[in-house]
Length: 454
Image 1 (cartoon, rainbow, N blue to C red):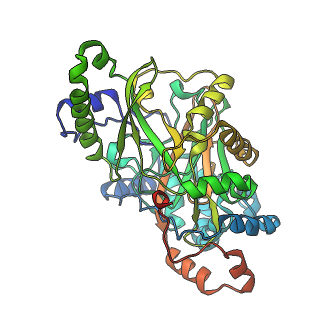
Image 2: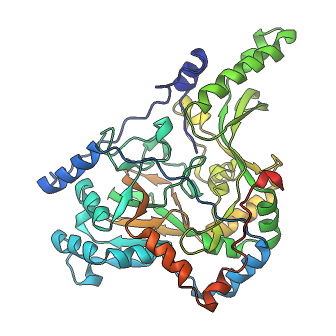
Image 3: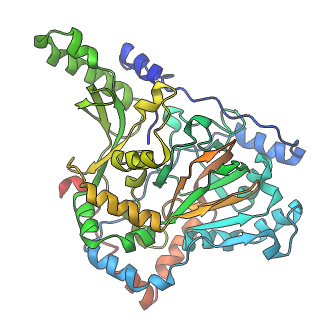
């Protein structure tokens, strides 16, 4: 979800479309840690000096001609789906403090680890002291041949880095104390047209209570959803409301009725220009009523997209939809359990999202509740300790975060890909036997997906 601040939007509106610095990040968390080795510090410094590329464009794959038949095929091979194996330092004959041996292991087994990430969606690494510090974490993913990219929120500068450096490759996860009772629903990381291919989530300090990192297999969610729900969502597509601006009540209070249409058109045009100048996807603004105090608001909606995609390497169809995290209804249901989100700044109110069909129709509450039930059934709670890492395929593995108490310090690095990815893709396509071809039946077509054309 795109994140904005009230000063940012106000500045953008006031300046027309001058918004170069309108989206301000929050300050990074600070921590006291042991000094990094000169080699590790040099690796971090070198990477900070390099400008990482933008997150790559999302690869949706071809439209699936028969989505229900594709789902049946996934169900028929349910027993073959393996997800998120765990590797402990002791499993490979190393002590947890043997950082040199651990680094050698990652270098020597990089190809197999990357292959496992793609096939199984994620790999969980535990009891590795190498990754307790940012420098060692960087050495870890560089040894694996992962290629870093900028955070997908880069254009709006919404996510701080762990060490506070502008070009740092390691971003802060959602650790703010003010967000501790906010359950982050399951989602794949993407903003508009861009999605990292993979990610590595690291724990530098676990929360005293809760704060588990959550993962779920998109193949299993696709498998377990009701076929009618899948058919409706895939047939009509889905659309996100990425932001709400709930502070235009003054129009009704102070602007004469005859002048309101022109005033609203002017405001909508200025805000639209400001926002679209900052993001690389078209944002459609709509006037509405309700918001947070029953006042007039502007809602920003992203373009329509499919809720299921074809994996760019394996060709598997799987769930790739953030309804669990973005649905206003599901968020309110969770607030009834964990307590209301704490609005400590205006940005918290702006950064509200919702979900609709691709044609802007409302998704039934019963369907949303079913999606929530299926999603949570497939969620794995990973209680991470310092140095633990979850390496995941962002297309195949969804992630989220449980509520917590105490101080939580987790970070994340995003990847545009990895060494040998193209060879892996070619091998997957060219090495199909009859069984593999059967698995992909219904997942390929010559016509790309355009939900708005259905």
